[in-house]
Image (cartoon, rainbow, N blue to C red; front, top):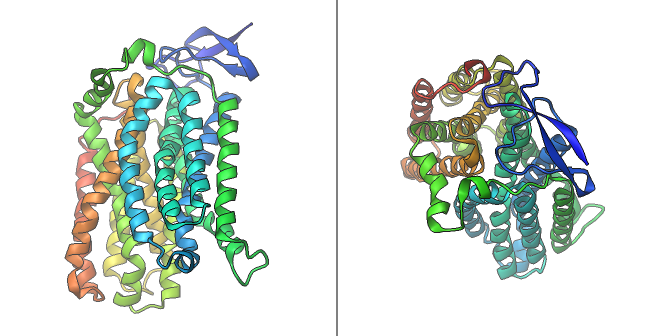
Length: 448
């Protein structure tokens, strides 16, 4: 049994014309088999591929919700363990998360999404089930195990979008992926609090919540395994036998390309003003520096992830629509710079309520454009590794700048002068990203 599938060559335009047609076998359960990366991307959105991407993006929502859960149930963990160990868990989580970003990309390129993604989701679910055992060791260990699988959520979603969806929609679907992740961060924690609230209607044990998370993850893993197109990755044609040299080859390709570094650094520098600045220190700056109430400060800072939910897909859609990456990325960076300067130097009350934080979140959606550029400036055979390297560089930028900001904050934390001094590297970083925008190559479809 055969089906006809539209395919697109790398240089084709988005007009919808069919550039080439190829035969592909239909696998069991109605899945289309894609033999290797030589199979071109379709020019039109196909329901099976869109559903495959959505399930991976749903995994991103899921892992953001469970990532925030220990902070939501901190009082319960202190009561059970004597100490929440939240700092240890977060530090360990992100260390493992950043390192696994390099591994997951290679696995996707070599073995494909059908094999790699269900395993990653199942590992994350297993970490939840281990956490549900209740002991401190199980909690910390289970949380770290979650990081091993969780990195596959964004990288896998980006890989599926780059491999199975039309090239002209890449930035849109990368932005939608980030949108779902931010929705998990902004809204996913509320049900957890409702379930474990001792004064609420449910008053469920926190162990039961983690058990539920684990079951949800296992169901999602099975769904991805059933629906994801059954390809074999690029191993046969592009990666050779499983040797150290072949494992390192994709990294040599990516890291030897200056454009990869430009994209990674731009993405990192456009993220840190909101992650380190707004979400990390923003509430403290408003409360101590501007002398607002903590309730107002928390509400104001919460507008940043809501801005991400708006900005990530919106700017990605604009970039795909006009066929250009650089103007959208540069425009977002300039707006982010202006909003950051307003947050630092314009007193609270001058601008409309919550507007600065919301605009910062929307503008920082431009940080998603380099994720598309990273895939477009490197060969298709290493698209998974490219996504992993991009995440590694973004998290690496955060890891470098975070202690610098903390050091500059010094003992004078609580005054606006200390925040001005500490946030100066973040402002300089935005300026650096703007300069690098002129060095990065235009990869939108209109430039092809």
